[in-house]
Every structure is written in structure tokens, then in C-alpha cells.
Image 1: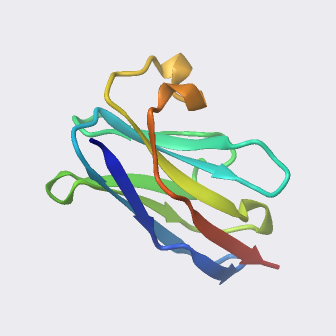
Image 2: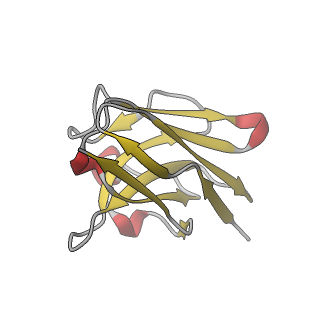
Amino acid sequence: QVQLVESGGGLVQAGGSLRLSCTVSGRTFSMAWFRQAPGKEREFVGTISWGGGSPYYADSVKGRFTISRDNAKNTVYLQMNSLKPEDTAVYYCAATQRRPLLSQVQRLDEYGYWGQGTQVTVSS
């Protein structure tokens, strides 16, 4: 049974930073972060595999957000810098037990396991 537990959300001023954590129990191949703003669809933020390789990011966060992993702690991190009010959303981590095609990593249905979500609010 795979379970994901997120932490680290909160309120921050524009230009500030936050780091989210997602600890996973159970075996998974790769992890991803998504976010959902009020009234909008859930959107892909980035993904990383446990076995190596570089993270892959959505264009909207590239250069500001960094995904990293600590295999010993079964934890994935989302470091968010230069935050903007439009980054305000509930952030979710997700996991898959198979290797997704790069063309598919942004699809919600590629991920069978989801965290509970954590609120990030960026004030202007």
C-alpha cells in the first residue's frame, strides 16, 4: 500500500520561498508535484524519478522551482523560490509505480497515488 504525506505549505509574501516535502511509504518509480488553484484544473508542476535522471518541470515554474529527492528518507522536496501570487494553490504530490513516457508525465491519470494536498498562499 502506497501512502504519501505532504508538509510545508503556508503563507508567504511575493518573492519569498517555501519548501514542500512529500514522504512516501511503499515502492514507487517516480514522483510528481501538481497544483490546483481555486476554480482551475489541477496542473502539473514537475516530476522526478527515484532511480536517477534530472527532474522535469512545467514551463510556468522552470527556473524558480526545484524538485529533489532523498532516497534514504523516501522523501521528495519542492523548493519554491521567487514565489508569485499566481502560485497560490493547493499543492499535491503524486506517485506512480511504473515508468511514464515523458510525453505522459503531465497527465493526472499517470499517477495512481496522491497526497492530501497542502495549501500555499502567496500574498502580493
